[in-house]
Length: 242
Image (cartoon, rainbow, N blue to C red):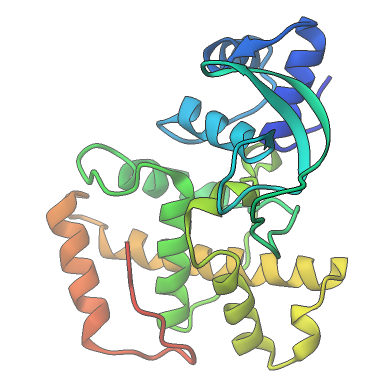
């Protein structure tokens, strides 16, 4: 039985252990789905899985590579198990381990905004980052009433965003005005994640209200962004970017 807090890479590692051999990303993904080991919450799960694996693969140099090595590249898109610490390459520092949650009552608006009708948010992390910026700009921070822990998002998924985790630290520092919020302690990590989650939840609520009674499509999203550019009420004015 897997731990719901396991990262994508840890789940892939467990699959390879259980298989007792190297495997392709497609094989690893099929086994994860068959055994219901992880909920990806993205229209491109194989891409997300491949990215998570490659971040912790020996010899694969990425700007967001993790220091801990879990995999070895043994063939074209075929991975085996490996252990150790990266001795070369760069690592994206500051990325936390705590998963990012979203409120259960926002699932419909999330699904609609990630649909082909909008065609912008192909990955959930992009939508949550956008929503958090909206929340900050409107000074709207809304606690999550209920959340499905199984749908939490591994922070390494945000690794394709060059501003992550800097935006997480910036939001929290502006909110708390305390340098302790930037520390590496578990309490500080919990606080940073809570701030981001609640701003993202607030932003999703604003999007939910805006699209009530109107089509959720690309034209509607552009119209929403234009309304956001008209004025800024937040304490921290982040440029609304997609």
